[in-house]
Image 1 (tube, rainbow, N blue to C red):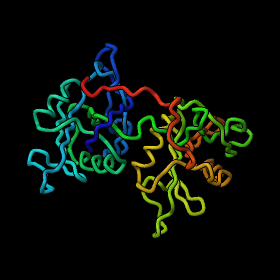
Image 2: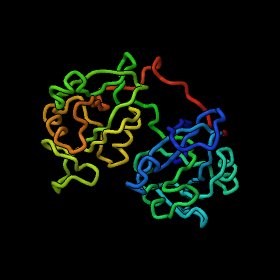
Image 3: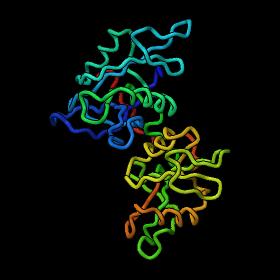
Length: 284
């Protein structure tokens, strides 16, 4: 949804050339191609390195309706998209000509609902995924596990990865590091864990695991986009029981280090000394 804040996203597509330049934000299901058409997350890439698709946004009118050429509605916003590949710097002009602005992602639920709508549209211009230039994604470079020393909490088995791989302990690393994904949520009243959160149960919680390494802030957003009740595994979780369930998973990397991004509910605003510079790529 539209706000005045400007953030920037995360990267990883094949590039057309090697021209350097500032980074641009993407809203993409590239990470999940072949697995899920509706799961979108952020990426960044150099603004001059490849083409993207167009996703524009404008607020609903005074009567709460969307114009005919902005057919998708989520909350108070209307969306229009075009899957024709264009240069990054063309997206802003295209949206302006449509009477809108480059789309922005303000909440995990907005990302989830947009993903569902876009999944119904056949891919075009890219092989098996979609990639849209966006203005910002609230939550980028905001860490649920950053401490006063500017480091991020992780859950690891490094010291016992061979002798006792399920033995987990809390440690720290730089917030620019990469960790694996371990999400949890309360078991719903139905007693059935929802899709994505059914890797295992511990006491009253459902868990989702991904052994791929990602940025700490992106892991946090993975959990929230997957389910409104989802969050990173927390510092007060039962790590002994979780470790026993993890090693039972068929894809558990025995003999290798596992380390998961932790959420610390006591974490407050990012200390000013830790805050990254805020780039402005809205007009690139």
